Image (cartoon, rainbow, N blue to C red; front, side, top):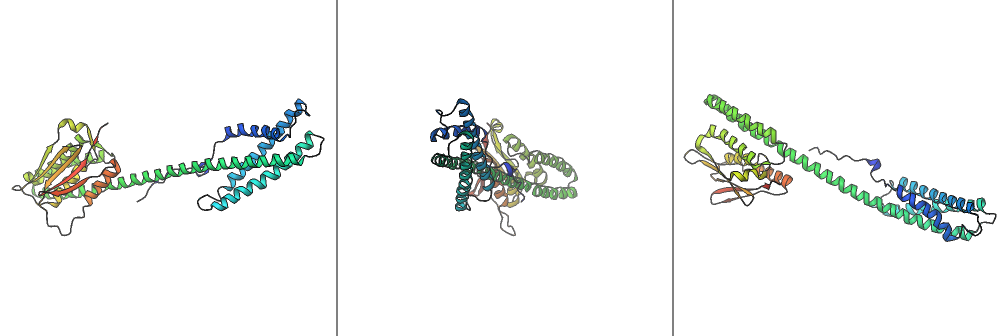
Length: 353
């Protein structure tokens, strides 16, 4: 069975839209860290020196942030938390430290060369570099957390898409199993009538066209009105009566009003009728009565049991397929049992919203 793959975009799968985050935090760190460490001293600087100093330190924050962001984006595809967690931690720590520390020290020393005539205060440089490193580690952790959350969400979406694609493929396969069996039996019947009862063969052919039209129109649907399904069953029984006459009978115990308010998977009742014909002996003296009753939002489909002697035991594949269709479409299951010489199948119906 070929299952269609969900569409994904590998390049954009785990990208983080952090533009607003950067626009706020890069200037914030570029101003707060120099103030915390005393790097920019308002008492010794003119207003323009203060402005240009902060512009320079914001540039430091930008270079450190963007560089670490690029490294994080480039390296994360080589290691993942599930298969290589230790390698992932080591790569993150080493990349952060070996990029952030030398770049920060170099740019801070450059600040001293541009804005003061004093020697480099290594205590301030060390303190500022340590704060920058802590901030980078924290921001990297936030990035990784956000990406892991997005990755988890994408995996859930992908799994749901795969499961849905699988369910749709299975449902289509189950629907397609209906047609060959039905048309094979119908053609056999038509061939028999053409030879023995030509007039009835024409009637059978016209009714068969109506029946098959219903199959073509509704096989792509998951649910149909109970009224439509019951009408289809009546047409199918016309085919049966053309061949078997009074040896088959249909009893309906469903109020007309209820037919408009309930839904069932299409071609469900016909499959049960076909099974009853296939597995039971019947004649005009002892007809096969196929009855349908609606009780507590369930269709009770019943026929008496006079089992045919088959060459091999029944595989019950018809009931199995119908049950699978019910589970896929309605999340409900059918049930069947033998009791008091009768075989009963319970089909859940869905109320029309």
